[in-house]
Length: 210
Ligand SMILES: Nc1ncnc2c1ncn2[C@@H]1O[C@H](COP(=O)(O)OP(=O)(O)OP(=O)(O)O)[C@@H](O)[C@H]1O
Image (cartoon, rainbow, N blue to C red; front, side):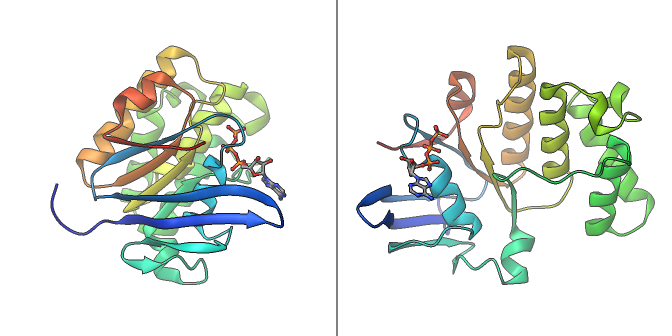
């Protein structure tokens, strides 16, 4: 694929005293590509995602998103990047559908389109029958799908996901893999840390750590 990388790491490194959290890592991801980050427990996958999110500073090398050095303080960075790396806070007294619609409305405005976007992603993730429930009324896997819905309902050029397979059965993992592939075809670039073979299989490229 030609063009300008939307995600780029050049010898990105994180150390803390004598401890290496992320060994020097170099790669690029183009718009519309789905990349996996793999490696054993503790190899630095979450650290790498946090570096692109802007919540973990590099101690050497560089990383950029959309051609700009990562800076969480910049609204342009936050507009470009959607993530499910840190847990997403949820409101205990709002239904799943209300919360997904609220996030959609914060990006698309309080127009019918917001409810449509919310309804579509809820449907795609198989949550339609659970939309009127509250967060404490769903299983761990269903809560994970809800977090993915909150992540996917907003526009984004780059999506960072840390183990999106968490708590999901094989059928739901296939559902998520299908959704990632569809969004990538529409132009979104993905970087996903995963231990799941079915997701690695769906990837266009891979960063192997450790
Ligand atoms: N605050 C910290 N202080 C010291 N070491 C840390 C700290 N945070 C993480 N580490 C270490 O950094 C390394 C990378 O952690 P990271 O969470 O990025 O790994 P990971 O590949 O995502 O692991 P897993 O597959 O278990 O989720 C680990 O060895 C971890 O122990």
